[in-house]
Amino acid sequence: MPNNLSDREQIIYDFLPAGRQKPITLKNLSCLANMNQREVREIIYALVVKRGLPVGSSTEPNAGGYFVIKDRDDLEVATRHLTPRAKKIFKRARALDRLFTRIQEWIEGPDTRRAKAIAYGILAAAATYFAVHLFLFLIDL
Image 1 (cartoon, rainbow, N blue to C red):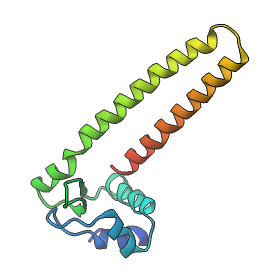
Image 2: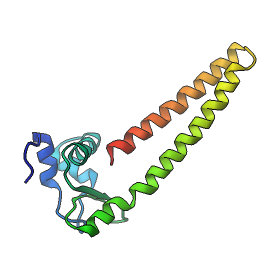
Image 3: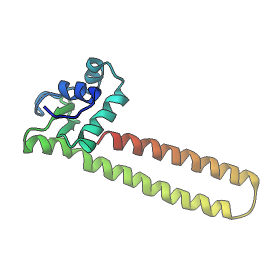
């Protein structure tokens, strides 16, 4: 049993099954812990990144959820979905960067108030979309 966990971290950790065979879903974990799903994801993130505990997740159909990694096979299952997901997020970031460049060129082009307002609106929406998805990705690692 890990030491120095906060009460909330300990509650979540105690509900995690050992090994990938019967992972607990986010929904069930949040119900058992009496926390919302965002709080649970943030705690899982803290357990792995800040506390260094081997907590994995699986996105397998009918077997998705969280578990404590016990062996190399558990680790493989826990990391299998992370790389493709990260690649998609960085692909989206590159697309937004290209969009930003086009908008900047548009803004710096002919000086019309309407064009600038539209460009800034598109830019703000794109930046918000990216920031939200990046945050969700990072707390789910």
